[in-house]
Image (cartoon, rainbow, N blue to C red; front, side, top):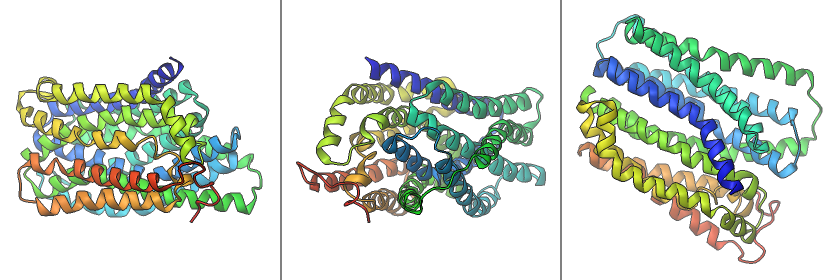
Length: 416
């Protein structure tokens, strides 16, 4: 019962962000033309991708805190912040170039395009700030703090965009409102970073190297996963008509909302399974988490059945095709659920290269699917994420089952 309370509390905390993003999608879909919907959707997708590139750094920080038992790890936070912002700086340039290219066919002027680039920078930086600020309370299971951080980013962004729509400011106003809404989270990160720098303590070179090595491996994995999550939408946005891209964007947004449940499952499972260094330890911890896992699986089944009816009801009758696409996109969570919790201690049991191999399989299979079926119907393209997750699940379980059944591999022996 305690696990269910922790799961529901964490889901509510992260649900603030997902709910606000979902509400933003509904408001935009009902208020703007299909061209405007596509522009905002591509800005949000590119921004989320830019922010997600460094997720492995946050994951490394959270796992380091769980395994060390340290509270308020100032040096780890500063290491994570520097690496995270470096990843964002490197990522933002090619994504800005993509955004310019993908929106070139849309009938908007210079103001809207500048606002789109500003939205990309501000939204990705605000989202990055929320990720960084959340990893310590994740490790401590501090749900109220996680909720406050999520609200500091998501609520102002929704409010800014909604005000722009209320005053009929058009797509440019919506993007400017999103930029303004990202400011509180960015300011919070700046304040915490300045305070951490004043209290920074010298850290051993060995621990710093271990953290960076784990961060690099997990970043490679999360980078691939971030690209994987948005590759199909970015592909459709760049290769199909605005009408088709709008249908796919709505479906993708709904499916992204379901990731709240799987992400929450991982956050809740982190304190329980994060310290495992052997295969047997991981399996015992997994058994204790079977309740939340089965609950998410049941909700997935309900969502699959309801999507074709609920999506057009919420977004409007013009998005009936998006309902069918949503159901197909939701299939990707079936294989994901089979390995999501095992993925937490995977680098300590099978070595850090296991995360990289998993990422290569996931992204590689999806890319091949999109290329092979590039001219197919949207419902066929929507199977690409499912195929990629099947590839990742196969690689994950192959590596995990090869670990020693009794003693596993110690974390030090599993290093690469």
